[in-house]
Length: 392
Figure 1 (cartoon, rainbow, N blue to C red):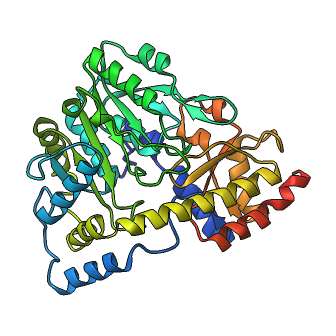
Figure 2: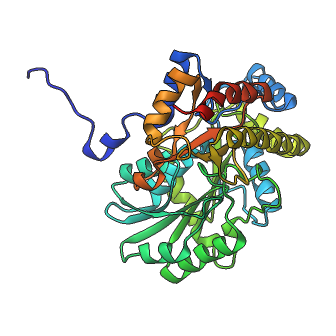
Figure 3: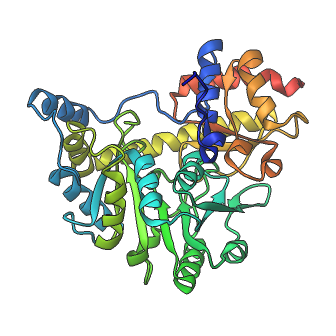
């Protein structure tokens, strides 16, 4: 048999390279300040790091239990109870290799090929890829934007539901926009899910990183929602440990059994010595989380003010690591072209929001900047961007 190129399967061809990889590679090559990829430049709490070291030296380096170590599952259940939902750590909590695996396993385990999944766009890029891997179809609903803040269009979500719809994916606090859905928003989604008998996958990885007077409302706390919702979160953003890849999914036993069925054939298990360390942090480092939240709010304010003074109009960000800005006051360039130019000419990397949406034209002037960096790094980025005010 002669040599031939074996192509990527058609359903995954659109996902060959992520926008985050592209922008980070540009940042590395040009020496740009990387405000594109959402990872912090400082470590999590010292006691968590020491707990990981102790676990490694203590021999916890082999396969952990398939559902996750009991100490971590118990800590996760305690954490969810603080948000108002009671989960049994035995059978209702599953430890995963980051939230990304939890999301993929949830869709793979619960959505049949040919069914539809509603995504609210702009959306985190792994959602669309997971839907494609499951052989399902995505239907997107754009968030509203009033020039200042992104929000939910409940009527548009309702209109997107068809007889093929199986699931709605919700992400609040929302990446990339930084919006935190209001209680009315969450109640509207819950009402749609109950009336149409839909599952909900809720990505709450930024649940602790909310600012100002915003309030995070977990959809599983609403009447009739716990039994149809899979809640996903992780240690990555809460504890500045994006490289540890310790995430989790929580739900009722029938739903978690489906998620586990898919998950066990993806990675089986992962992060053995990091699991007790995350359990320690969830239990003992709540004050540290509060300090991180306050620090991030200061850094958000610093970056948003700098962008605004340059003429890059920032929208309201009440959570996450990110603030989006409108570039149309400075240039007619498409956001993708703008972000590819930025590292070369101005030494800063960012991400075009249009790369995270099906309706790319709607977001052609929106750019996402990450503020989860040290203050001096943000000041340097603003200084490098300052010449933009004079035009391109």
